[in-house]
Length: 220
Ligand code: TYD
Image 1 (cartoon, rainbow, N blue to C red):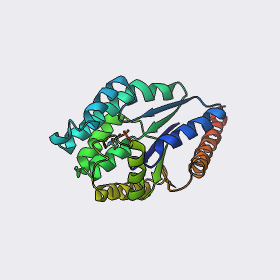
Image 2: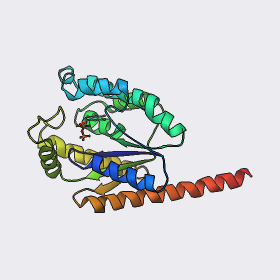
Image 3: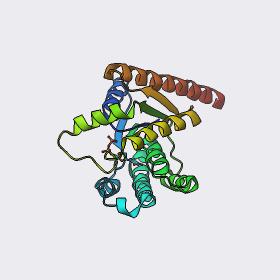
Image 4: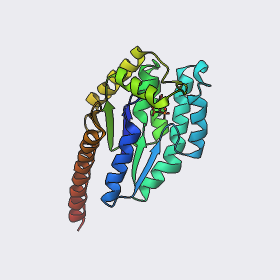
């Protein structure tokens, strides 16, 4: 199973991925936790170029292609091999980050975005995408508190309007793809959010197990 976590800045993705990984490992799953941009040596090299802002002046299309290049390396070098050996893969950000940050707030053409996405993922779509949702103001406050005196990265430093647009864009994706995407309200305690996510994942795992059993039965 391939599960991705999405949301704006300060939504608590990394905390929740850690919690879900522990929950799944306790149930006996082999779990690989990874993140984008990055997750493979090639992609980590590109991560630095993007997040430092070094590519910003070349425009959002350049950045979108860099994210896609990093994604393709991560897919082929790390995630697909892990899934092929039966691991559960939990990834912090994936295609929806590009759709939202580059496609919507970078104002790129939908056709171009689709073409880049198709090339980057080469068929590897998430089975489940958890969208951690909270007001942009709260997310930014949390991200600022976490960062302390460090400087904001290329995307954190944008205006509140841009962050609001991103929240709306995530909710629009969830509405368009309700089978894959589940919105989890994130302005709550870590425990409450973790419990909701565990329930969603356990339900999907149970459904999968029933399907596999039926398939095995039909093959006999
Ligand atoms: P990161 O430091 O990993 O932070 P976060 O905790 O917010 O995930 O920064 C990744 C940044 O890159 C984040 O601001 C979102 C942005 N991003 C994109 O714009 N497009 C993408 O496809 C991905 C994966 C990330």
